[in-house]
Image (cartoon, rainbow, N blue to C red; front, side, top):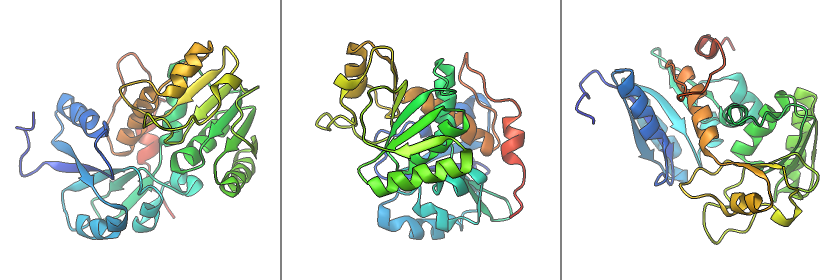
Length: 286
């Protein structure tokens, strides 16, 4: 599989901890092979307290062209790059870094745009819908801005940290004009419910929302990307809800991230926004 690696191969990495269930290296390497790109993606398992040390060493690599960034580094990486794409400035986190030839690192985040693109592929466009978003962390923040910008009629954000949820709702309203507010994780009455928390990755996790409060026909999106369905999605299906797992969001993020890194990619049978690579590769002037 990796026999093509040579002295000119460009390195792309996935930075996070843990990475045992990460799917990005497999996806990127498949793209690189299909496009005959002289590139490889490898995982870098970096503990929370080791990020700055990792970045110091990584900046010495002349053939490092980009990084994907996942938990727990999405927010801490902000202070370690040179420029922020508008997505990262808005959200306050990043999940991809482009390493320019002049040494500058440019950070962006596509969790939210990828989630909305995945929903659109599945026929679940948030436009003019009432949305409950559970989770106001890095991914949740990105999804909140993306859903609001996509035309949601209203957005309620719930998080165990009520202050964080309230602040995010206020920022979303101020920057997008969407009617956003904070509230409890009660899914009753919403047309779309999105779980942006880690709840569901482990079998012993509690539910992010009470499935009994879900009405039949509600669209339930769980961004967790694991082989088996989460308990929330199984319970939602039993209630007659329409469901979407983390797969479409994962692929949607890849469309944006690879365009940001200079590659054309779209899953078979899907469509990407027109002119995406040109838009994301436009030089930033801060």
